[in-house]
Length: 413
Image: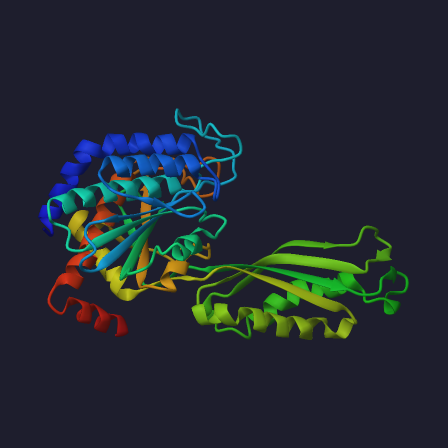
């Protein structure tokens, strides 16, 4: 089953199930749950999977699910959807507005979850008909926003035996019906850095007797990003931006400590791994003239999400079969973080962008991580088409005689 036959079957499946999937998404939207607290969400998804004859298992901490569809023979392809919400107030005036104060699905994870559920139900239907050439693993992941959920899935064996993995993420810059693809880095690493300076304080009339912490901290804030731009290949997309600077409490007193905090973002995996050592070396050189003691606290967030070329081509083929080649768009890189990157450190795969802006609307774009965010719910059906077709495309290619070798060779090109 490929091409037109696959599209027809998906269309028929959605004709029967799209309304129910939309209702399911609205239920999740009304009851958002934050990272590692997605108890109700996990239960609702689990109920739907079990009703379809599947056997999901919860992650050890109680939220999130791993569910295999099909037999254990042949290749295994994983599909991931994140299930957590954001600590924001839902500002929309809609019937399905969040009922939980201070929590909202403002990043589209309710759509990701519902699209993965729909794809899983369709693939279960294919498995019952003997039309699934391998196994598909559904990963309903908690805590993408924290982050940490991807690692919890991996630690629970979510990638054991997996040959390839796919995911999608809502994109309000794309029209509903469009799918954004990109080979290579699609999102950035996102780490946190805190720099603390300390030294003798004193009166502003006698700065020469102090470490002049405010002046030294200003040098760190301005010169560290500038020096960094000369130490790292500009194609790495390396960015250090400060979000908080604090020192002192009186205008005529030099403080004895100060702090600057910010984020480090990077599109290149090698540069990301080298970042802490480079920053510490540059920081020491900037602070050296000021007799200040410097401490750097560098906290890893997520690596860059680097889409593998063969997996992107599979997504392109899948979108062409299930949606039509006109649905595929080239998508730009983002310096936002996405913990799907942790999966790609272990197995090849790719993240696609799912258009959510209404085609027939003249309203402004409803950006992610805002209390006003919402989607054109027809995007759920598009996501089901793409995820199901991506899994089948990858399974078909691996199942062909010599298919695994061809895929491996293509990945090395």
